Image 1 (tube, helix red, strand yellow):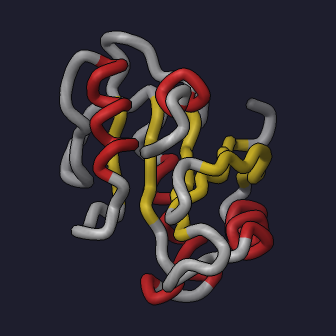
Image 2 (tube, helix red, strand yellow):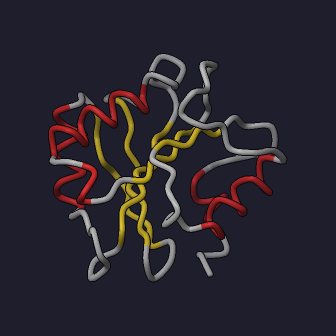
Image 3 (cartoon, rainbow, N blue to C red):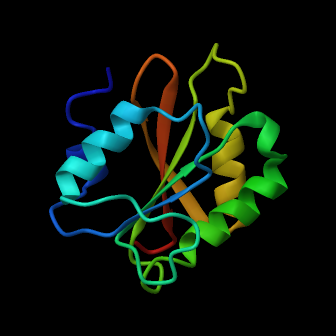
Length: 136
C-alpha cells in the first residue's frame, strides 16, 4: 500500500492533467489509482499531445544509462507548460530489482537542465524523485 498522501505530496488536484511515461506491468497500481482518484480522471499516456500539470515517469535500471534517463526527462518536460510543471521520476527502491540510485537521477536531471530536489518513499518497491526545470 503506498503512502496515503501520495497524490497530495505530488501536488495533484482535481482537474489536473497528469501524463505518465514508462508504464509497464511492474508499476505500482495503488499509486496510479490514488492519483487518478485525486484528479478525478485517468492518467494520460505517452501519446498525449496536450499540456500536463504533472508528469510521472517510471524508470528502471534496464531502461538505459544516465544519458538515456536525461533524454527521458527532456521528453517528460516537453509535456509541461514552459517548464512550469513538475516531473516525478519513479524508480525501484533500493534493494529492489532494477534499482536506480538517486544520484543517477540527479546527474541525469543536471544533464537535462533540470534539478532533482525531493525524494519520497512510495512503497516498499518504489520511490519518487521530484524533478523541476531550473528556476521553478
